Length: 262
Ligand SMILES: Nc1ncnc2c1ncn2[C@@H]1O[C@H](COP(=O)(O)OP(=O)(O)OP(=O)(O)O)[C@@H](O)[C@H]1O
Ligand SMILES: [Mg+2]
Image 1 (cartoon, rainbow, N blue to C red):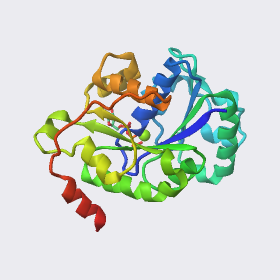
Image 2 (image 1 turned 180 degrees about the horizontal axis):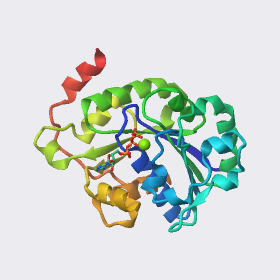
Image 3 (image 1 turned 180 degrees about the vertical axis):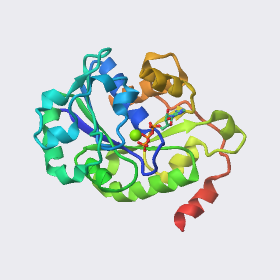
Image 4 (image 1 turned 90 degrees about the vertical axis):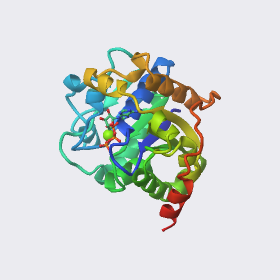
């Protein structure tokens, strides 16, 4: 039986969709059968990040409302045949309306796939509630900024009880130079504040924009961020790979601890 994972954040625009696309691609490259589900109806973009937008015929809401069969909505990746996508609806539709159907669907998919990965909408609204109700494991993406960390802290308080040790942190867009100069929190600081296990760190990397423009996963490129996502995939499979990015404490820890305590 496969595992159902949800990638969430609280704050929007921190890299959930980029992460889902690259974890999916990376795990498929490691010979796992993977299906990605975009639950962000109305603001779908996982199909675009994967360069699959022209293959979209049906979407998640069609499957949940029995408008189409599951196999009609599954899009196979042309580069990695073990990778599939169920895109989000182009119009706004609360997935929460179909939460029991979503659970049925993920249960059905876990029989056929090693990993079912849900791309969660931003915020802590109904889409978040639905996507986080059906997964076994949650990956919380944040960036090293005070507002994103405060939102991540809120998400931890909402999910901590349900996921316990199955809630892990991914810190994205770490700007090495800013950390060194003391203008950005270090990954160690962020992890210490949020106090959940660290799955990985991804640097700020212009290659992400180039990959997005081409609809090409970072793992197809020899880039710093691509290498980091490759290591994160191996950690998900249980390999012990040290997180190599390490910086001196930037002295932000006490400020952020005070903000979260308010
Ligand atoms: N490591 C990175 N370096 C540089 N840019 C990045 C990085 N990660 C993500 N981005 C950029 O940040 C933007 C937001 O990324 P993405 O769409 O993955 O975030 P999201 O959390 O899914 O957003 P939303 O909450 O709107 O769904 C995109 O333009 C993406 O290219
Ligand atoms: Mg997104």
